[in-house]
Length: 337
Image 1: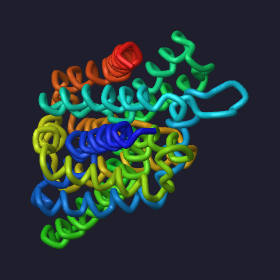
Image 2: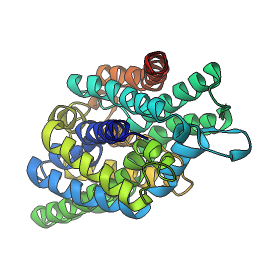
Image 3: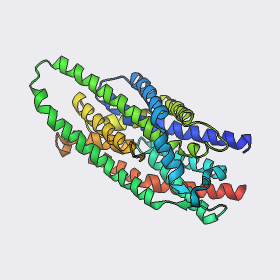
Image 4: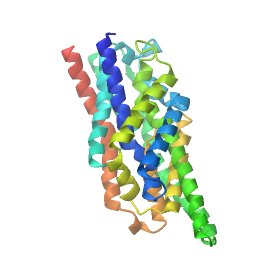
């Protein structure tokens, strides 16, 4: 691999990681800001710390699923992306482009969905052109797709249930100041937990292609790839995350400290559970589901159905658009080279 191609891979990989920070940061800190618990700067600082830890310590499972289990060579003799690094670059760029568009519009889409869609598009391209033998595992994609449906519903149910379970006892607490402090601490802890799972899930998914190249020209250990993705995430969160944070924290329902806490905990539990099986779910879907579930306790009118419907459309479009972009860009790259 030439130094120019290696630089292109790292640049494209950093771009995808930057998109995680710019879009998915809201999944961990939107509720703390919307609930008035932390300032934007403090929330971002907390996000960066725990997301990097999650990526370095436990990002490897999801990296392996995205980079090695969706598109494979017959017999597992080699990884198609390591054999065709130019297509790997096109895949990374395609995954990032759609997320950039969504971030500019303030929509919380899933970087994980975008990356999985891009990997699928690249796999179809490799199979169609036939420069090397490759198989696209649609059974694995089906499992991942089902998780995208289950995750927001599960997070909504978890948040709704948590609110119902604990709200009666909380109403009997007379010291409002003490109660507010307790839940401020809880929602901060829940946000830190979500930031950690963002590292394991979102950074893991977005660096799956880099992981596929780790045994070849790139030569990085899993922890090093996680650190690289975490630094890219931090850059995105610091430079371009406010629009989506505002949508998640203030645009779906009006949050107080308790609803913010239950929404964040419900989302974190859901994402963490899927990650233990190496399944890349959408932290965006989980937190939106959690917020909607917490808001529904106050009645359906408390939740912005119009905003949720628009977000839902972007969720449907994300893997399809990323797949088409990846296929098209990969085809252009192969034609030029």
